[in-house]
Length: 275
Length: 301
Image (cartoon, rainbow over all chains, first blue to last red; front, side, top):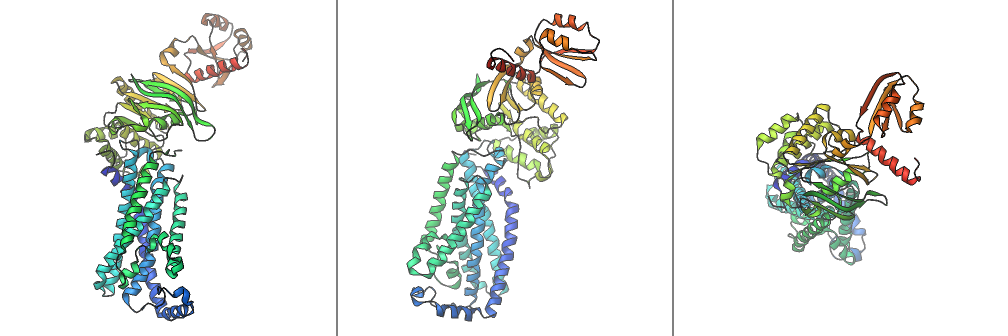
């Protein structure tokens, strides 16, 4: 074992988050089913016609970039499922933010750190293993989302979409990695996890809104760059639109690395708040 | 040889110091106690030595290295027990111990089992079901495994049952005889006095004094406890005794003068019991404050 990483500590960190992962997975499963059922009901209740009327009333100057000029064909399974997955991504981003926020600030108010740091590990090691553990938890969570999605495909006889779904979940992971990294970095500046969680929730909400607003109008397109939520369009992947957005991948990895480096540097200086 | 050195160390969280300008040394082979009431700075010293918090000023050296840059090899030689040990709630006690053993590089399973047995650790119970006393036993095992050269225990005996306290005290004394340096903090000065060779007395973030046990033994001061129905006011006036306490029917006071004079004076009273003992370290605190007040009030207490 070197001073920078510890597999036994990683195992400990993973066990620490198992219960939490189970709870979120159950919540996500219920949400996913709810979204699919609600969406199906809305479709049969006349959503396409309603959206069509809404689009017709939007001024041409706003709709001119074509992003909302055409009504999607909601009868297409890919479009349906793509919308549901795009909504599920918000849930994933919230979970990723929560994981990041609770990574370090918890340990500062919680004397669990006196157990971990009293062992022969460095501060960098505690940060790195914590981050990797959070990432693994996020990975397992997305595997569960993938399994649920495959279940939906199977029940609808649409296994031909499997490749797209796998790509979509990979996009999930990349986007969620950005939120995880930013929240992780924030947690090293916060005194307790509830502070960090609140700020993370605000960041997710604001960035998703930025993404949506940025998508509506070319004059507000710059907002999309402030929204990791829009770096890769999961809806487009599943509905047969654009492929994975290369800049989104690069941005995701870069943001994660920068956040991690700053987190390590920050963690070297802070006091672990103890009672 | 110094194993822990604090050189003009202070720690401020707010305007009031958690630890004022403090300098002392713990030598190799010491059984060093840090005593004092709540919020006196005992845990702050431990947290600074273990690098949980960074000093506002001053330097701390542990085993020849700065506490903020302790190598992994050095850390392997330190056994630490926190005041309030907390672990993953879903894990079993033995799993937590084994995880710590893997990280510390302890491969001797027999040692782990023997320590768990010695301190009656509920190996198969989940952490969530264990009270503080049981979690402290786990922390004791983790601190003592792997042949540490320096053992640091914060609030060492708090929340432990008397059997575990005894076992821990004897185990630490045996370790100390083998050359292991032990540092313990506790609120109970009299308990520390029984096992420590040197004790630092803390109050409100300040180091009051470091008492050596052998110096205490040489002290002329004695604690006198008398059980009688008679009025002892004349005795108090005669020997200028001011700090008098009553407990369980005994009247108790510190006496610094010729003991023969006191015994002669006491023969004039009808005594049920008389005890003359060495003062405890709690008394050392009282003497310290008497001296301080004397200085502040120009010779009068």
